[in-house]
Image 1: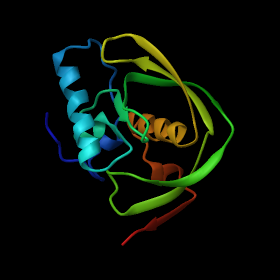
Image 2 (image 1 turned 45 degrees about the vertical axis):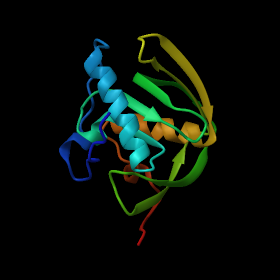
Image 3 (image 1 turned 60 degrees about the horizontal axis):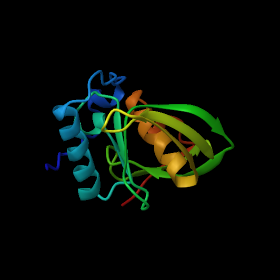
Image 4 (image 1 turned 30 degrees about the horizontal axis):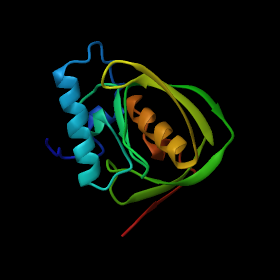
Length: 151
């Protein structure tokens, strides 16, 4: 597969609401594969399609347990609160403290077009919220209570 260059701010695609995927076809599968390869190549925990310049509602996440790919993901419930440090491949060198829900339930389609539901907590819940925010044109710095630059 291919490793894409990660789009960085202030690219407009990062601020636009991504469009839903209507049909899962070979092109969509190829984008998912390339997103996975790009995320791993840049040592990311997650990646949203807009981060490679594709304005489609697709995310990939791997917090160290296994790869999760979701098409048209949607958070259906949230509970609790956690505050933690976040960074982003699209904002290199920037880190912030971001309040997020402690637990989320997320639905979406897998690469076969089957509806899946995932209950997540802690880091995985944070990753889902971060990546789905990307699909809505929201960056973690929009929600951060504290932002700093790393050297």
